[in-house]
Length: 78
Image 1 (cartoon, helix red, strand yellow):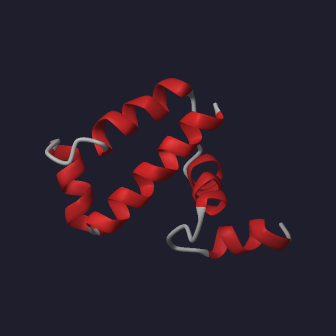
Image 2 (cartoon, rainbow, N blue to C red; image 1 turned 90 degrees about the vertical axis):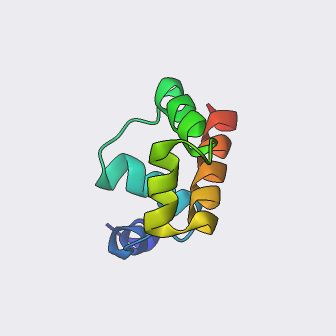
């Protein structure tokens, strides 16, 4: 691993969209399928959803909003 991917591999939390994609796809081994993306948007987009509230409780509301934005960008690119 070299360049950006090594930096992404070393991060505990993604620093930007490319790092987030790396985290989801490489570190977590998840496929960013349209179905998965839409499911996450539905949950994170509903601030009252239990899972969304739990996420915000663990990482903060600004982080929930940032991750939601990254899922929305991934949806636009799909």
